Image 1 (cartoon, rainbow over the protein chains, first blue to last red):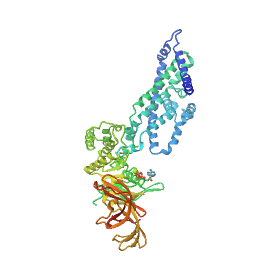
Image 2: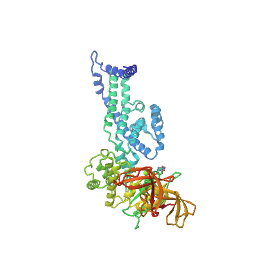
Image 3: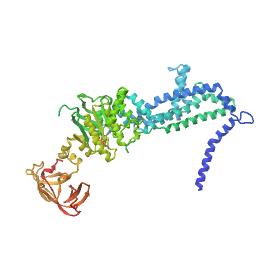
Image 4: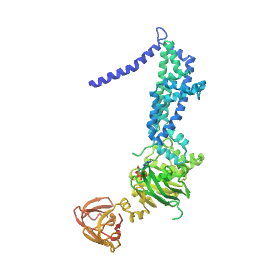
Length: 263
Length: 354
Ligand SMILES: Nc1ncnc2c1ncn2[C@@H]1O[C@H](COP(=O)(O)OP(=O)(O)OP(=O)(O)O)[C@@H](O)[C@H]1O
Ligand SMILES: [Mg+2]
């Protein structure tokens, strides 16, 4: 074996160790709730905790709403930008990147100032209002991923010609988006959706500052007060995120082939 | 012509400072097949897109069936269009693609199914309704695109270089098929192409476009045999151009390649002025020939065997003339370097104003 090869392998093994050792250690630790023997006791405890079920259910529902709002916002926008306003693309791309640059805590403080109960739009005045505010906050957080996924999907099809073909056959905008554009970027939308789901399930800052019973604050709370259960919860959270990633991979296998374009 | 079905009335189109279509006038009769022919960038697609409604003319009116459609949206014009890149909907089957327009218009399922079956029959793909576009060849995809455009019974069919993405064999067979379907349905059709052979073989009339201007409108016969401008003459078919000096404009006597030639017609130039004489390859013979009294001496410089015809290039003075002779298995083809004469009739000489 050449020295370069060996170097590469060493780097690879070190990298894998860096990623997996903490995970393995956490997993190992989470199994030690019962003294002297490995068991899934910690998992049994958290999975049967009603607070776990409540917060997870709440976060899952919020994630679904976030995905719905995100898709309704991003797909028509990205489509329109590609079709009619291509010169605005850099601007839109910059805007969608902002949530990566601005910390969530800054965004949520901004929200609290703008929409507090004495403002002209008192979202935080009611629980339902705060839920809505949280969903919009998550839409913002997920924007970089959602927009990029959808835009990549749109790049794979000839948006302009397909739109014109549908238009000359008598179709109007809602029909074109629903019957032609969305189905052709569905895979991209789904991968954006799974990413959004993974982000929302683990999110702490916004949910905590808006004081909503979400999964993130529950994890944090548990972590501060128990020993073995948080480790188990971390492993569960990892599993959920990874399941999302695997689903993205699986779903993209079923991508419909796009029309053969003349070379 | 009886009442025109499509009327383009002094259409102009500018994108910013660039004028792309200038003063375009055209009347098209019902059921007519008209081609727009011209080099890349001459404004064919732009004109077609204005008729479809994807672009708005900067000035001028467009009427279809007596109705002014200049300001209507594409989906209100009842036009069928076939795109160069097929533009089939990748997520729909062939049958769903063909039925799309009717479905949008709210036709019943039974009606759609009937029409789709009929269209599949017309394009000779009756077994392919359940396939997806990516499972078809390019030629099949384009036939589906044609069926999709025609399924809604449009008033007008527009095709923008529908065959240019296909290979030569399919191109020829598909153009015959398109033309025969068009004849059968009697639909008024505009066909954009930069392929002169396509335009000449398919069209009732051809519009030759150059830099946004319709240089000549006429039947393929007229366009080829009586080109109105220099550009039309050189763009459609091969053309030999001889530089000559006018000796006597009244009798049409000119001097070219060291010989005096009598064209027996009035020339549009004064004595001593230069003039260009154009000759199609098929009106020039190698060697003397009865009925072709004008002769110029030359040397055979190139011989290409094209099958049924042999194209020969002959050097006359400092210029080269192309001419076609039929292949004759009994006679050897002309040899390169052989001294010869080329002959032609004064009637076949095109004198085109520059
Ligand atoms: N949307 C546009 N904005 C600016 N210029 C345009 C636009 N569309 C076309 N043009 C210009 O108009 C001219 C004519 O274009 P057009 O597409 O009509 O040519 P064409 O005859 O169809 O050529 P081709 O055979 O290459 O398809 C070109 O110079 C092109 O650059
Ligand atoms: Mg074009």
